[in-house]
Length: 487
Image (cartoon, rainbow, N blue to C red):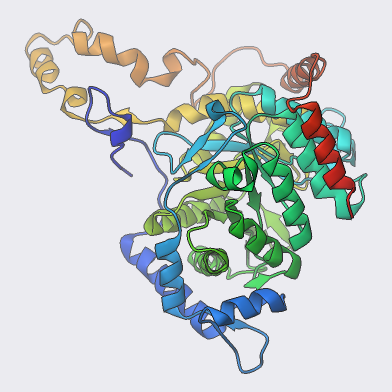
């Protein structure tokens, strides 16, 4: 659970942060070997003739039945070699740049693509709309705890063929943070790239400073849908980082064992990596998992299961093993807020999520197994994260931090309190000194059921009532509108 963070060192030489690990070195090698065997012997269904031909021309082959692409080990190895191990997810201004990988923190996004809005106080739900996309974009821009934008909900009121582009145009018009979007086809990806280029020095500037990245999910087990696969090669050729968010469900779309799901998800990630690297060698790519336990009684996901976080910890280890940037989903309290009377009640749940060794995380604001979103949930998740993130911050671990001389002196006079080392270190070493609610045991005091939800609703309303102006020029707004309207 230790790794040196030399970039963070000032007068101290070593820093370490707590990390949740599941796999041993032998397990990691076993998962990798099994993944290679899966790709060589089972392969993946790639439902695009164009992408399939591209892969075969690069050295892949087809099963005798002709419906699955087989990936030879050398093609996987060459893709691992060519994939960049560090790059930037650029903001529209450099103050919002996210440099990957990160040693000292987890960059956080909200949840993605819910289809309904839930009122956590009344329990009522309604379909999400374009206005909700705008509102959550404004909240994301306002909240310093959120580092990048992902569409919290979908604009369900828009035509399906325009939906992603409308959501993307709302993001570019209302946030300066890095934008992570989606596309369902090659033509839609090309329009997304064109739109993003408006905010850089054209396509070449976009490749150097990608203000846009994209989440494209392999379909478990081992399937790449036509539109998503063709969108992926367009994004990769443009230098847009691709996040391969695998969403395997243990017992339903992957093995019922944790390590079995990790192995299948790893194979799906590696297949996605090959697609991006064959499309353009050196294109930025992010290892990702939204894998979860399954609820076999109702045939659904179970994001709240303890084992879900263990699986994601294992997937994060595989990404580190390859030296690749990673994004693990699942940072959020979901419906746990209904039982909370203060933010500290949620800290133990988010502490587990904060310790997963990933560069990027997502999930803020999601409810009902990420199928929907809530304004109250979004605010409470942000407040809770502000406390929980302190548990995964880096700590100094060099000789000065150990302080042999302090131990020696205190052993003689029995007094640590008066020592300079104590005075200079205690406040920064223990987060709860400056953040009293950053504790795992809760605190005594009067609690009013429902008060936290009402306070969160008021905060969301306060932010959304503030005057706002577009964060894009008139020309950029007009050009985005033309791109959306163009057939």
